Image (cartoon, rainbow, N blue to C red):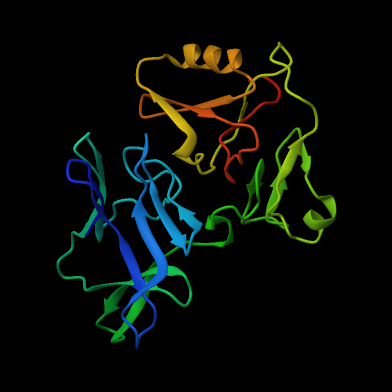
Length: 256
């Protein structure tokens, strides 16, 4: 299966669920390769972004560990100026695989056939859990599947609407406790094991060193944060009123 863009012709290979088993017209559950500076796979529920895979890290999409090569599936991502696409194939030809875009549940379900039980066994679903759904916790938040409530505040931020936040409506996210002051008191805080930010607003630089990137970010403290992946430096321009992704990789706080 191949999902993505032929950048020379403008061909966009997308996937769409049927409206129902009885109506094979395209439904509103669609998947595509987002065509931007550093692409990732995005699922849409109508006009709302529903899931994103995170950028490719050389082995898999960083926010979708289930999409890594294994004994049954092989995955690859290509972005070379001519094409930008994600593909996978079944490596074990003896395994029968079913791949279903479930319009009712809004899930991509992949199953393998069991000869022993004569039935399909669910191999993976995407999104895989509550936190995998895009925008669950709003801006400047983190989502933890092993804690309740799922949505947690990042250090230095307070819920934008405390009453709604405490009632488990986390969609409005957070505001800063204090305005940034790009001095020795402000810097970058490291967050591990989180989905990298949406690349819609990112700038990609393959030349800057990590330290040069840090300096550039701090010199533009009102609008940038950064992360490092595959030897590339990603800088995020946070425009006024923009929403930082639900799984942020950096946040101004105490220096590392």
